[in-house]
Structure formats: structure tokens, C-alpha cells
Image 1: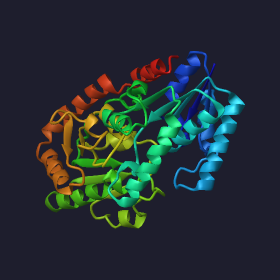
Image 2: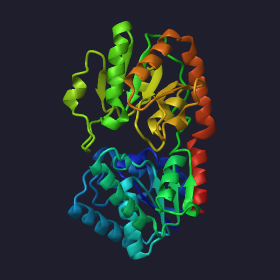
Image 3: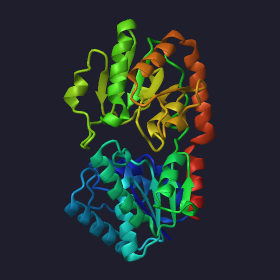
Image 4: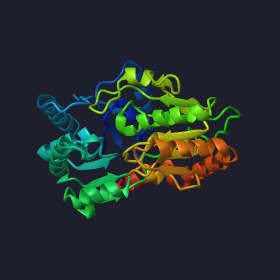
Length: 366
């Protein structure tokens, strides 16, 4: 039996899907994975995982008609080549184009909605128009799907209320999970308090609010450190690198870091003031390593915090509320360790990757 995985970027196969793939191989399934072309350093890891990697034509950003048509043709070719019994797609473009392609060749299709992204934040006329277009595409793509997996109730309810899918096809899991052994618990460092945010350089991740809050806090507590880790991005919501570098007096920008565990280990509090998420993996990884969480009450983010137990939630877009909670941590350093231990306990209970993979296999009826 063949299981085909579609992921937006190759890195997802090496991180989010690696344990899933190992389990599928143990179940004697032949695993084929596909995304855009691999970087050379990823090929070694792929070989070690002992599955077939067959790339497709895929541009992560933009909405080129010709580019999307090429992606559909590439996916159809992939389906016909491998004739899989199960197809599991994650990421907006691959759920949409993978789903539409599966209808053309009549292949069994499962979708994993990891977040709704830029299009569903309908704050302007153009975004409302884009939301309508994307909703129609989702409805077409998911019409014959076997199941649609969500990471939070809000996203599921939106799809059902919009008539994109019926409730009977929907399932909810606690994100993509975290490897609790790889992201093991670490003690809070005995240094000046440091806040950490990990994110691609996107406006709706709340990076500007993080920077504004840091500037406010630094005026009162100059020794407190604010770290920002994450790569540049090419989407419409991208923050220019020049703007990020202009915050250097109060933000230490480290760029892309391949292994974020050292960054989490050296911080005291993890911060993600995002406007919307599926379930943010970096937050769950920070929880697993025993860090309190400071985030927003946004969809996806609120699922990671039990208020005043393992952290706090603030209003979306409010740098002043964010700064106040940062100051609370600075003035109550004795609470950081206990909140971090609570984060680890929540991660063990809800976000263990092995539990979540087991749920996905049940949904696929494997």
C-alpha cells in the first residue's frame, strides 16, 4: 500500500512529518513524499529516512495562473506515476491544488489544514475578495475528500459555516505535535531575563508589536534582552529586513537558525503575538522545553495558554498590553520556573507527536 505526503516545503518532511513517516514505514506502507525541489543538505536526511522523494513544481508565494497550472499538472503526473492508496496534503496551496488534482484522477485525498493564512484575514476589500476566491477553491478541492483535519475548532467551524465541507468530514488534532525527547525540558537560565520570538518576518506574526513592546520595556529595564529568530519571507505581508535591522537598539535579530533548541534553552519567556495561527509549532516546542508563553488571544494561539498557569494572552495588535505582561515577568522572576514546568506538563498531555500521529493514522484508517 502506498501513502503519498504533500508538504509545502521540504523542511516539513524532515521535521513535522519525519516521525509520521517512520511509523508508516513500520506499518509496512510504502511512503512517497513530495514538495518543491530539495536543497542538497536535505537529501542526506531524506535518504536516511528511507522513503521516496519525488519533487513537484511548486512556488510557495504568489498566485500566478500559469504557475498554479504547472503545479496542478505536476501533481497529476505524480499521482499517475505512483497511484497511491492514500494522499495526505498539508499547506494551503497543496491542499487546494492537490485536492483539485485528486478529483481529476479520482484519487483518495485527505487534507490537513495547518492554518488559514493571509487570505482569510478579511480586513480590506482586496482580502475579502481573495477570501471568496480561496473559499471557492477550497470547496472545489475538498468536495471529494475523505477527511479534513484541523488544528483548532475555530478554523473547523469557519469551513463548516462557509459550506466548504460538512461537519461529518472534519476532525481536530492538537497541531503537528512535538517530539518531547528532542525538545526536552531545560532549566531556566541564571542570567538577565531574555524574551524570545521565533517567526518568519511577517507583519501578522506580531513582530512589530514585539519590537514596540521591547522598546517600551527597555526604557525601564535596559538589561533585559529581546531575541528575534526567523528567516526573511517573500509574501505580501513580509517585513523588510531593513526595518528589522532598524530595531537593533532593542531587538537582537539572529536571522534563520536551523536548530532552535539552543535559542529556546537560553531564553526565559517565549513570545508570539501573532494575529492568527493553526497551532504554532515553535510555541509548542518552547512549551516542551519548559518555557512560559506570552501570546495573543488569537485563533490557534489561545490553545497554547492556560491563563496565569503557563503564561498569558494579550489582545491582538496591542504592544502596550504585551509590554505590561513582559514587565510582570521581569518583576516576578520566581514565577517563570513554575510556569515553565506547567508548559511542559501541558505539552506532555496534549502535544506529544506520537499521540497526534496515532490520531492521524486513525483518521486515515491505517
